[in-house]
Length: 108
Image (cartoon, rainbow, N blue to C red; front, side, top):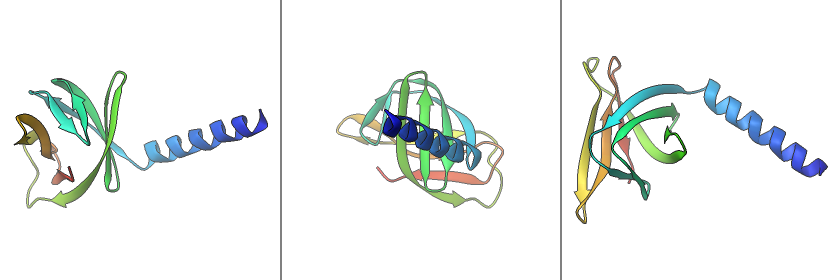
């Protein structure tokens, strides 16, 4: 029982560290798409960026993906999601984040 309590405290600390060291952005997917093997339905998601990881979640759906963070020359006017099509399915390739110079390139 004591080991379980320590585990819960440890996981809570990691989650709080992740949240404090990250930034969150709202992204709308106009098409169902895959990220790291997980199928996401069309809709609005929160993307939390922490280093080279992006956590995409909405409700009970949550997926973590490896990304390369790139900086553009100027701020993006709107959030843009670019897809690639593999085996007839959309996969998120990159996301340009509105109001920032940040572009996330997914390592699918």
